Image (cartoon, rainbow, N blue to C red; front, side, top):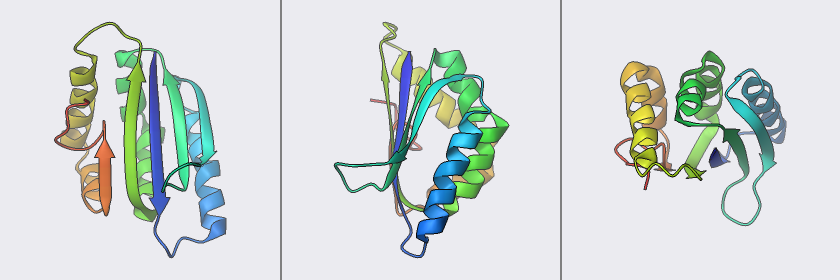
Amino acid sequence: MIYHSIRFTLKPEVTAVEKTELAATMRELFDRIPAVKARVVGPDFGGKYELGAVLVIEDIAGYAEYMNHPAHLELDRVGLPLVEEFMSSDITDDPDPETGAKIAEVHRSRFANVPDIAELISGLAEYTGSAAPGKHGH
C-alpha cells in the first residue's frame, strides 16, 4: 500500500468559503478515481499547513493511475492557483527498494507530459516532498 499525503496553505486572498469549497471539490474528485481505495480530506493540525489529504493507493500502478487520472488533473488546475505552499509525502510498505524511484518517475513523467500542471507547480511559493520536480522520493 502507498499512503499519499498532501498538505498545503492557501494564498491570503482565499476566502473561508473558497477553502470549504476546495475541500469539497477535493473529496468529490478523489472519489472519481478508482485507484483511491480510501481518503481523508480536511483541516491540517499540528503544523503550518491549513488543509491536507491522505489517500490510500494499492500499488505503484494505482499511483500512476491516480496521478494521471482526469479528475486529479482537474483538481490540480482548479486547486493549485489557490495554493501558496504545498508538500507531499508517500509512505509505503512495499518491500521493493525501487518504490521511491518509481514514485519519482511517475511525477517526472506527469510533469513532462502535462506542461500546464508543471507550470502551475513552478508558480507556487514552496513545493516540497515526493512530488516535487527534481526530487527522487527519499
